[in-house]
Length: 270
Image (cartoon, rainbow, N blue to C red; front, side):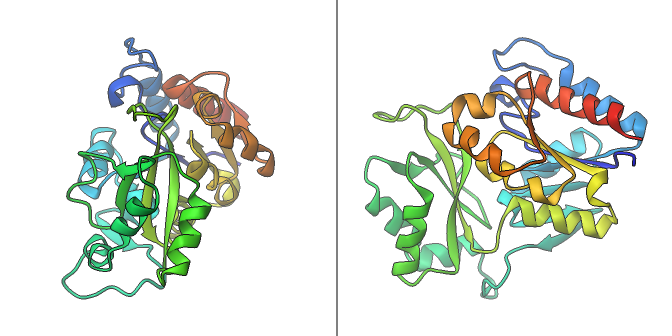
């Protein structure tokens, strides 16, 4: 069966150093990503960005690569042909307030920051002007954070790990990016919903990413590719890969790994 859709993470996957479409992981100029996108265009394959970034940012990235679908704020919603679909599950929305405003009024970000001093902080400046998810950086156990949320009556929320980042933090060897979101939110859920809306069969889709949250998309697609820099930077990704029989680690990193995943899939399609 032919490949019809590629779901891809941005930072650490499609993008290279400096969050550029035209650099490799070391900042050298690279055409790997563009060549992979060209191959998809020629084969009629849709490319859907799945990112933790805000809607306006991901919309611009999707527009630049000529696509009309994208998933934003860690799967809180997806856009398809200019129509937004929320993926916040049973979370109760208050009229006139964003999800972030509701979480702030409940004191949830302050609860988490106070529970992990020196280990968790807002991911400045990218935590500003968000609507669906609060953004943090640091080095904590999400399971411990989620148990704390449950204990304090915030079981309708969860903290998810969106992978290793380049930003340095004092006393932390490898900082990660974390999203505080409604409990039902995930990239996996948004990918599955988009694929159903488009009518894609499981075997007609692949996904590419570098983090634990990306890896959870594996059951929602026919094949999942982890770019090599993912397990290199995060032992958790390396340990989790074995739980997903359709997951493969590419030989190359970042955009070159994305290119490898696309070309491998197009060549293997029948």
